[in-house]
Length: 421
Image 1 (cartoon, helix red, strand yellow):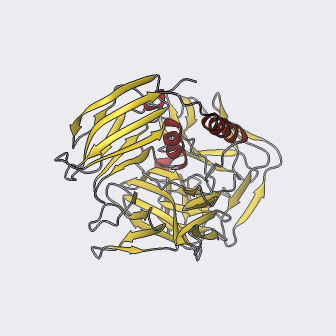
Image 2 (cartoon, rainbow, N blue to C red):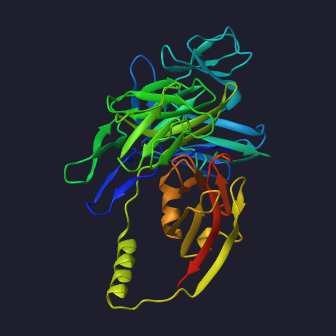
Image 3 (cartoon, rainbow, N blue to C red):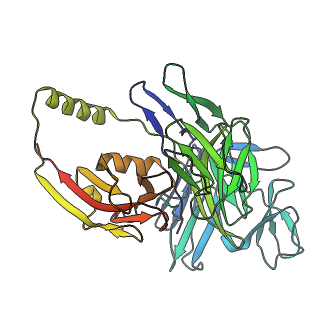
């Protein structure tokens, strides 16, 4: 399963500004999968490679029935010349700058020098005319379903895709790069929009990709965590990218030389590769704004407080009680069973204590817009001690994860609170 931790959107509630986020990813690919019938929906915009990149808008639904005799595994789904879905087992879809001598290893091949697709017709390689992948499906015992990313989302390739060992980034992704503060104290950002297709080799086993202000792709390898948010810049390498909440700036670790400000990049996705097979490709999703219903609920709560109607909590449940400094913490109940959560933590000696109160809605929102990451940073003590909460694909959230067993930070208590009006 995919392992990723991605940045949160920074929101300045006083000035109504946001930063460090993806604003928009064109939703060009529209596919459905029902009872082993996969359909490219009318209105989808498919991208084709070659000497010049071209796009085609599909004017009517195009469907393919997936055979229930196909072997278990993951399959790329490309579009034919008219958009009809074509399946190829991932292990049989190669990529590189030179075509193989024959088709003994691969059935299809993405040739990076010409940015187009080829297939083996039993005697030679010929152009296939396929589009870039639309999505990936997984087949288990003859039943097809969309493959899932690390957030449990269907792997439908809007904004970026991968083929073989190469990542492909599409135009018109809009984002805000964190860039400190304006003179009035509001968040400062650089607005960018990608303007071309870019193909980048997924060169290492764990890699994180960002879009730079000059429309180029920035890539960095990572070991355990691709991205972290901190209040102070660490002196040791804890992740490829670090976002400093206090100054609204991003930093990147460069070879053992420490963290340096990199205010021209916004994080988009991360990947994991096992040998030559990509097993993780998680795209960060655009920020979502509050609905009218959400705002009405907030206003109703404000009106209640203004009216002096304060309520004591009706239910207080201790989800964890101890002083654990390493390993995982199993909460006694799901966090979203409670309206509020209180975390009490401190240093190992217990003479410096911290607390953090948050709503479960806030935590759900952070996990959702982290996009790519079923993790949220909850506690930080001295700039290097971190605890995360993890949300699994099945929706259960009962585990706190320690980033490092060597850090001077312990969790002492986690409390769930409900208030019923």
